[in-house]
Image (cartoon, rainbow, N blue to C red):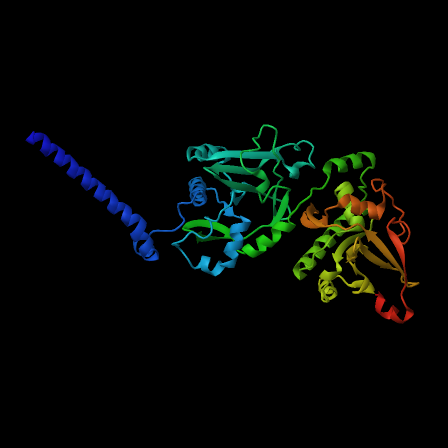
Length: 459
């Protein structure tokens, strides 16, 4: 009996000691830690928020890309915006006690990669899966090869989505284009893809192809993780809503040249070469001035119909919104060796500038004005002072590639072309009267003789 009592007492004592120890641990964790708060974080090295799924998924992804020597860079709009608002703090901080960026609630974190730097594409995915990622890759035809019959149809990777736990990493694959810019494709979900894999509709990139300036990158430490970001995150953010890209229609261009043979005469080749050089020079001048422009009139028609400069057009046509006009534009062109040929109208009404390029090729810049339900540019007949107005449905601007550079065109290209050239724009017409041939031209009065010295200037 005495022996049993001792064993019971010993068991009770052990149980009581264990209960007391558990109480001490609970009290320390839930009361003392909360009471001391930040003091304990600083003294013990504890960090707030670093156990979130978002941060751990990003950390794993960075470990994955680093181990495979894949130089990804952060392009996530939400996080870049937070970084741009706290840029000096980010640049000058190597460690953090609180997760401020990658722990923000979201479904995706978006990174980018320049495809030519992805050396081990096929070996990358098994490693990702071994680290717990479920990955999806989308591919499509390389548009850069559409103009080459034997190569069109070659597929390239466009987007990768890797999911870890409840968070997903969206990797946008950028491809270099001949205009020294970066392009990404449309994320198209093929039939076998599980639409519930991630909430695809919430993706920030991939709804349409996009074009971006090639960003200079810098390495920073964000929430304790070393990442590459655009050196000018604000500029990259400003590009995103205006990045939509549309391709030249190579298939339709081939059909056009099967029906209407290309003009390969010496005169035509010389004109196209001079026009290309003039367009590239004009783009350089306007980009330096910060003036947004787009291909207009015959130059836009040539791009859309035949992916080239129309050999009998004899000039280069650009459009500019009047609100983007700058008073030093004429001087900038003259200093670049392009003298002013004529200036019609004024900033308030029907402004048009024409500059003389080499080999007789001229550059026409038409300024567009916006009304409630349409846009228009003006025209002036020098000998009579008659004014004309060319009406266009409202349009937005997209990027495209033309003569080896990234330029703007109207996104609503068909409507823009049809307004200017009618439904028969696919048929080449060499005889054209700018005062009567366009279906969108309207009489717009006559300039008062007292204003002719200002609104009709010939050089």
